[in-house]
Image: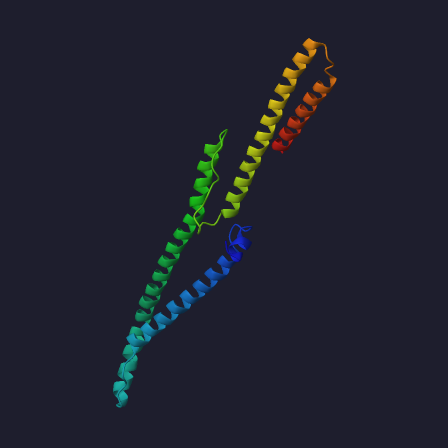
Length: 194
C-alpha cells in the first residue's frame, strides 16, 4: 500500500480528495466559461464594412441579437456543468452509500456469528470505518476465545476437584484457580460491556 493511502487510512474522506476536487471544479468552470465566451464571440462576430451607415446598421443588429444570444449561451453553458456536477455527485455518493449498505448488511450478518472481515472497493471512502469494524470483530473473537479457554480450564479444574474430593485431598488451590478464572472472565465481560 502506498504511503499516501496508508496516511489517509485514518481519515474518512482523504484530504487529497478535497485538493483534487477543487482543482477539477476550478478547471472545469474555467473551461466552460472560456468555451461560452468563445462561442459568443463567433456568434456575434461580424465583419464591419467601411461604410459608416452599414457599420451602424450592423452594430444595431448585434445589439438586438446579443442579449438573446448571450442568454441562450449562458443557459446552455449552465445546464451542461450542472448535469456533469449531478453525475459526479451521484458517482461520489455511491462511493459512500455502497460501503454504508455493505456495513449495514455486514452488521446484520455478524450478530451472534463470526463473519469474514468486511472489505470495500479501492475507491470507496469509508475504509476507516471498515478497519474499525474489523478491529472490533477481531477483539470480540479474541475475547470469546479467551472466555472459552477459561471455561475449559474451569471445567477441567472442577473435574480435578471432584476427584480430589473423592480422594480426600485439599480443594483450596483448585477452588482458588476456578475463582481466578471466573474473575478473569468477569473482567473480559466488563470490557465488552464498555
